[in-house]
Amino acid sequence: MHDDDPIRILRQETLSTNYFELKKVTFSQRRQDGSEQEETREVYHNAGGAAVLLYNPSTRKVLLTRQFRIGARMAGHDGFMIEVPAGMLDDADPGERVRAELCEETGFRGHGLRKVIAFFPNPSSLTETVHCFLGEYGERDRKGEGGGKEEEGEDIEVLEMDVDEAWRQVKEGGIVDAKTVILLQFLKDELS
Image 1 (cartoon, one colour):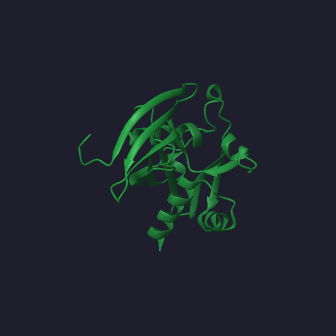
Image 2 (image 1 turned 90 degrees about the horizontal axis):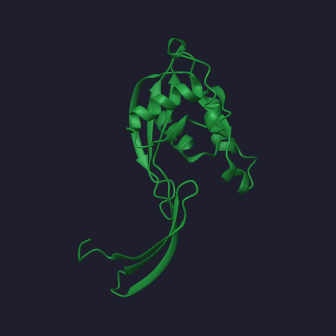
Image 3 (image 1 turned 180 degrees about the vertical axis):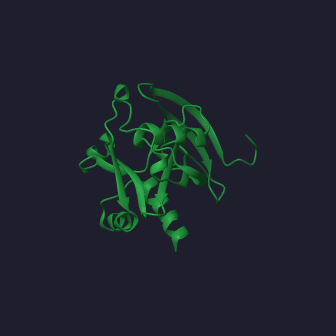
């Protein structure tokens, strides 16, 4: 830490290590006017992730999934989210991780994968960074059925959706997952 750093971590207390580590962090912040303030926040140290949206130019379809998410259910949604294939990095390279997740979740391999953005989904309370990729797919890229790993509790429905329908669902609230909305917007910009 540098002397000119306006943030000093004062204390960290581990509250839980059940799934990932949840910490209570107390820090001091030097404000723009020079005064100091002390704050305490809970920070969830979850693993980074990688996500990918595949587009089929000959059919104008995108490859998506639908699966249950407890956080969305607890927030008042039915919990069944339409999403791009994604997974936690688990110390893997983001490009390698998305290739593995594609096959596990959708049964497709894809080609021409390229990273378009990395972002923090909620930097106020999560350490997670999500690496996002775009690519293409066709029938020759099918390697299996997909559906996820049953031993990990995954029950994933594979969806091939017309790209215009996907954009309509974003506008009407049918697709509300952040990484999916971001990747659909990147694809829309590329196709414009």
